[in-house]
Length: 131
Image (cartoon, rainbow, N blue to C red; front, top):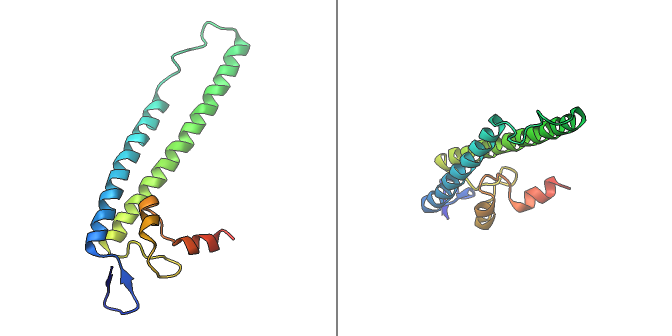
């Protein structure tokens, strides 16, 4: 860690920021792959169609398919949001503000950033927020 121009302001070193950037880029790549899989599953039809079955069974199957499709839409939306948060973290890395808690101004623990690289809160600030 190195001190910035202000003695009270600290940040992660450029080497640390590069390490976080690599981690985030790999997570973005994985997340985009998962999003693509989710999106493509929305475009496919049920291979076990209900065309030749009774209407009551068909309605149950259609309802189940609708519920599943809504679930996949929600997962895709969450995945898009996750990607946006990771991309925002890359901007913070470029600005050299990555890893600084937006509540306390202190450095977020490296272990937390490795586990949740898009976080903007230290664990202490997160715990206070959830109380």
